[in-house]
Image 1 (cartoon, helix red, strand yellow):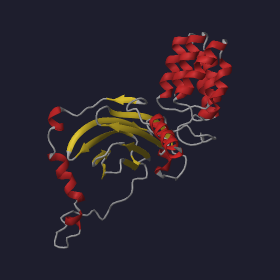
Image 2 (cartoon, helix red, strand yellow; image 1 turned 90 degrees about the horizontal axis):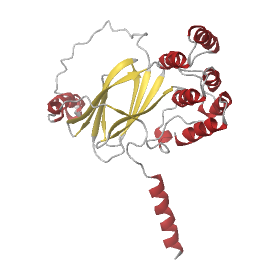
Image 3 (cartoon, one colour; image 1 turned 90 degrees about the vertical axis):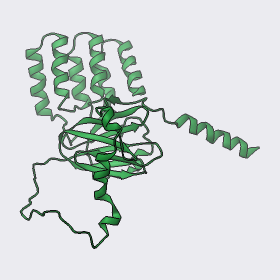
Image 4 (cartoon, one colour; image 1 turned 135 degrees about the horizontal axis):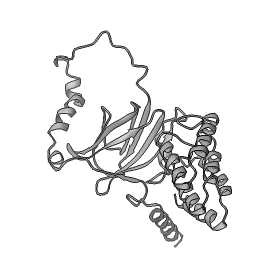
Length: 284
């Protein structure tokens, strides 16, 4: 009887923690055409490079022309792309000129150039999905892919250490990757205090109404992360609580120290707005 009870508890826990595909993240548009998805020729040609039998064959001639004058481009930039496919099967992921093929469901790309890069997902040689990512320097993009749902952008975070183990993903199953505690906002694209003061002063000087202020802040969010204290000051500069709430919700994704987001609550005039922001963060 005791064994049956324990089994029921374990089964319940598994069901509670089961992944719901596509529940979290922004669905990225599939840019692959139907013609491309019905042909595996392009991928098979590329996969010849990774044929280990050919690679280990000493009779195979190497016709690659070597450039003896090659020098590393120090201005290339550095970014990372992490992708998971929580399904059984052999998948190939190509991102920014790099390609990984395996059945583990975990794909990590380092030394990526910042800017717009294409990413494609293949299964058994057939193209399933293709889209374009906007990769920022010194940031890591985290994605989930489901064959029946699509590719979901979970979030983008500053690269804060050289620890790249995938054990960090064990508790992250289509949920935001960066809900870690601690202060780590001294890296990446986080706005420093001097720059923020210049930005805030210009905001106050040039924008007199909420709409203009919010538009000005949204434009900067395309390029910068903010601390909780900075977000509090920006939200506090807005006149109406409904606009404050809208801005506080949208800026949560760009917060570098989410564990301190409680500071933003001080920017509101009404308790109901604070409560609504709390509920939003709890569900995020």
